[in-house]
Length: 183
Image 1 (cartoon, one colour):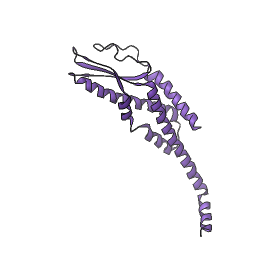
Image 2 (cartoon, rainbow, N blue to C red):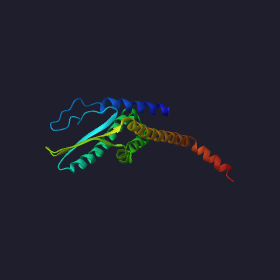
Image 3 (tube, rainbow, N blue to C red):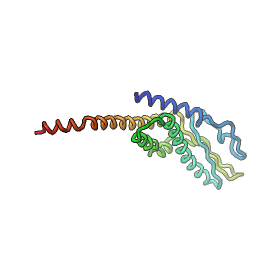
Image 4 (cartoon, one colour):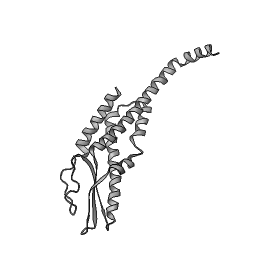
């Protein structure tokens, strides 16, 4: 049963990524920006940043891309969790989902997999432009792992709650029998 839920979550993730986050830009034209700026890239999830200043603006724009990608990934997981786990009634399960939605290693994932596919500094306008991307397959594998973790924790909470209910229902009888036969 859990595998069916996980499969549905992953399918929703793929559909959501394709429809909104990966293909949502229809021809953006920003005066002074390179032609590739804000244009979608096939099979990659990309972010675009810019920074004004001298040549050091390139580093500022690259750092901004890391931050922006982490924020974008968190946004995707928020939507997928909302779409698939919004019907959870148990407060313990909700707490587990909230706890595991945020990956403490997300910044490491972004740092490892983010590729700066385009970087340019425009002298005339003193601005650096950066396109940074993560391959869709890499991103999907990362999200599948995160969703499996979330579902595993929810399943653990459900089974713990079930055992607690059984203990509450039969706990007194069992402890009395144990006391009678204890040597």
